[in-house]
Length: 84
Image (tube, rainbow, N blue to C red; front, side, top):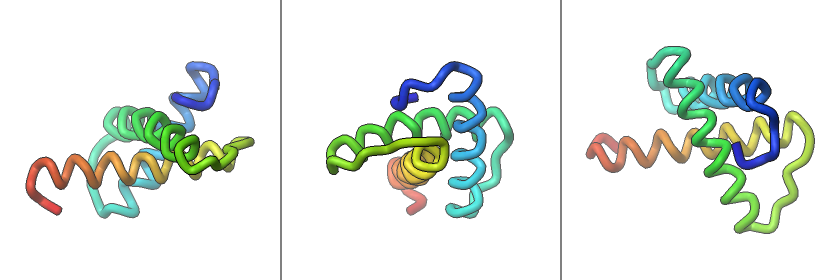
């Protein structure tokens, strides 16, 4: 993830962020896809936060940035597949 977390914490935050994104976008996928989407979302969220000059700190900040990034990832997948 783009926030300097350890591997286990990245997986945990990735799962939570992917789960949040799944509910917000009304998607339906499993634990593994939630983790993958959440970790990718963490990278996207870190990039977006950095581009906007936003400091992301603490567990909640990382989770929110990762969830926003995961929502963007799911939205982009839908756009590329023509379902948006």
